[in-house]
Length: 470
Image (cartoon, rainbow, N blue to C red; front, side, top):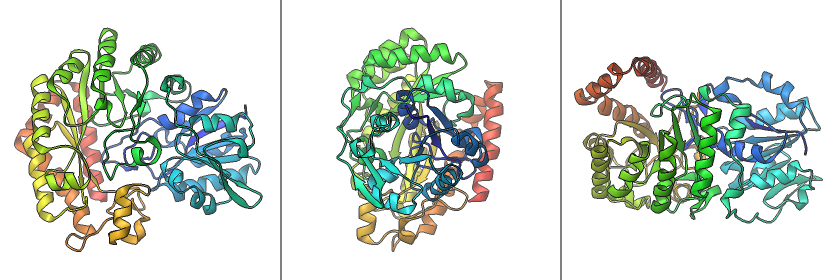
């Protein structure tokens, strides 16, 4: 094996660009997802090392001497961080010209040739699912013999055949072994999850066809390929031994509830372990399945409501009805399942009136906490193609964040300029959280737990600082 470094590079201060991030940006409060998409191939490459620079506050100056000791470096990149990541690659190559550097991630998977032409420091791109692609590179195979690879060779760029989609997900080794070896779980924060937490995937792909969603349209696909419930439970049992301080496990599958019988089967295996867990869910899970999951340790569901306007949901092919989402939310409240709801402003069809409608809808269904994002037209998605065809892109859609890593609106409509979309995020947050009932609920939560009190106060300071920086 080549001595291999997996690197999530330093970027904007507080920037969450890891492969677990649903969108890459600086968040309202300090938030970092686990770099699971890097940890997975790292678990396949013996003797490798994973550095996740942003949450550990590791600088480029600290990375350089470590990279000098390696023969192969694999960087995960994203659309917002690509230019910065290229500069990191160039610094690594300047320091060690013999270092072979590869880029992975959705941004380069959809445009591998453009990525390679952007800098001679990039030797190859691992396209789509790159786990076994990277292992074969690390084994020292000629790049020309590795499926799923685009690479630079003698002044030209070559594209090898696609790698076959991985069907037997149980072939993937546990990522928690890499977490224990190379990461510090206390570095990872998510506002709505208990701290410290651990996240991982139990499957890849998503059956939904949401036009804005990055992962299924680029590297994951629209078939939900899953690990067996036994495999998942075994990894959680091992994680409990490794991390006795962890208070919650999060399953970061695009839609964990895509396969309801399997979700129930996993829940029943987790119940005897006595762990608290949460997951991504669509707002249509039946009461019976919710109850099985709740009875076996489920605490919270991360739910993408996106909009309170049915036509916008239809426009983005969300595949959900507002009345079904309302019933689902009532069922969760009855069962005592917490919801963190996510909403997106600026989707195709958005108007001032639909923004108002969504704000009222969020207040009506009243999830415990919310996240408000701006529609981000990532290359490779249907929404990006729509934006190009209709002339909606600001600055050619090249900028999804500002110079501080804060998300900006890359879409602008004749009837709704990008400045209004951007400003509406702050309006949404203030009107949702500054209601007497919501303030009372959050204060009550804080009074019940000194730890939660300290955490919410810290997050409040970060939240207001974030708004002021916007």
